[in-house]
Amino acid sequence: MIFLEVILPVLLIFLSGYILQRKFQMDLKPISSLAIYILTTALVFRTFYKTELDLQLFYIVIISLLLLGALIVLTQLTARLFRYDKSQESALMLSTAFMNSGNYGTPIILFAYGDAGFTYAVQIMVFHSIIMGVFGVYFASRGGGGVGTAIRAIFKQPSNYAVVLAILLQQLNIVIPESYYQAIDLVAQAAIPVVMLILGMQLANVSSKALEWQGLSAASVIRLIASPVLAYVICLFFPIDPLLQKVLVILAAMPSAATTAIYAIQFNMRPQFVSSSVLVTTLFSVGTLTILLNILH
Image (cartoon, helix red, strand yellow):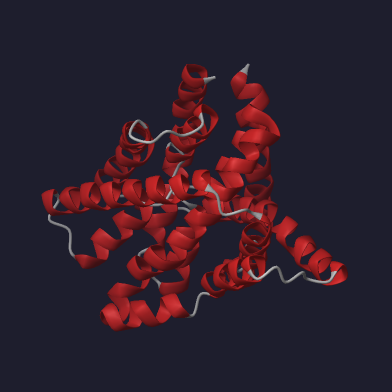
């Protein structure tokens, strides 16, 4: 029942993008640039402009950062075990440390927990997008030109500036004229469905002949099993709303983030492996998320 009501509607949107790409073989780089530089930036700005800075948001930030740190350490240990070079480690990091809380997680939470859960999910998703805009870009770009190139790439991400601007406007009580806010809101509304379609299109480009099963197996275990377990343990140390705890754990169990696959394309950081991780973890997540939702529902 949970699969039919919660997961299947989301999968059908991915399927639409998949079919579109199989038929027309479109160039994904300009579409991904549109999603990163305009749609996601508008969504990040709108969310932080409207979200009050309260204690629950503080807990979201702390828990998300602790989870990120734990996943980075676990992935680095795995990379050393497999004797990966920096490029392979970075690709594995993109596949494990960042979850698909946006174009997969938020609709799942909406169908599972309604508007209350969705509100939390959007806040978490936006902060995750900031994390990916910093750490994701760093890992995606560091193989091409070292730390300096990675840091410069971070400062080129407009969503990072959108957060600062939105918080400043909110704290200074500067009201954006209604017509301008409606324009921002209109663009922001397109972000999640467009990135969902991009994920389906990316999956259509993955070649099953080139799958690196050792790395993909490790990415799947870390992303779909270790991540929600770590999130649950971390949540136990904070006095948070039980609904927020469920949302955090479920989002932690999401497959590899489609956005990091976009970054891998942008910076040519083993995009085939990262996209393969998105494909494999997305397919496996149908089963793992169904089990987890039944446990937490």
